[in-house]
Amino acid sequence: MLKPTDDPLRDRRGKLKTSKIPIKLIPSEGPLPRKPSWIRARAPTQAAVLTLKLLLRAHQLHTVCEQAACPNLGECFANGTATFMIMGELCTRRCPFCDVAHGRPGPLDEAEPQNLAEAVTLMKLKYVVITSVDRDDLRDGGAGHFAKCIAAVRQRSQAIRIEILTPDFRKRVARALAALETAPPDVFNHNIETVPRLYRQARPGADYAGSLDLLRQFKSAQPGIPTKSGLMLGLGEAIPEVHEVLRDLREHGCEMLTVGQYLQPSRYHLPVARFVHPEEFMALGEFARSLGFASVASGPLVRSSYHADQQARALSKRGY
Image (cartoon, rainbow, N blue to C red; front, side, top):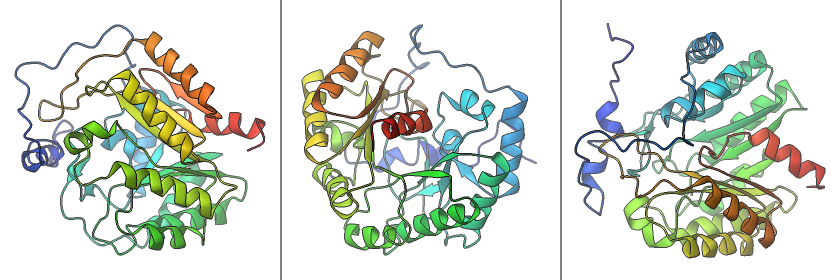
């Protein structure tokens, strides 16, 4: 029997995954850098956390909160909220910042949409975020499965608001957007992640212009639905480069933004170049608002779906 601390996918999350990326990654020696005082999250030991984990396992569901080692897991799980990760535990990409395991995914679980809808109902959620691993093995990149999950959740509750955080659907964008037209979300989120100079290092297999174009094409197809994106800082980017990314996002119609600190999951992942001070996050938030972003969350512990319901609610008050 596996011990609670055992992780059968541990090497696929880091060592094996990052051994074959374009830019060689030298594993960190010794302990990871000590986090500064402003990056402290409460350990997820609350009883509500265990209850929610048992509920997720009972419905054979995964959360990005667990898979990506999110520092806010304790807070969100204790409040009965989660970002669901569909289409399995294995990703077809090898992004060295990410703690999701790489491998050849199995076939889609046809029961997953209904299992997800039942879990969302039992959790009594009013706002749900659905994300996924990359599925480059599927003809539509998994967009049709997103649509089935959205439809199943809405069948249980017309009042619930649904945000999806999608992959880039590389070379499958037209087919993916056509699939999402059958069951559109309330918010469409796709993370730009970092500045274009660092793409080959941080997002092998992805394309900066392609990610921007996905946001533009979705907005063109669904002009009434807000689009959202996010960046992580601390990989070696310069602030003027971040400013250019924010300008690019606005030029491509993006209305919502998250900016947070990158944290290295293990010594086999990309190292943290620096810990960005909270005042810099505040300044970036103000800069983003000056560009016209309608909703901005910028801070060290901010993640793509952290307080997503509050961001969407603020956007609604502005008439979006």
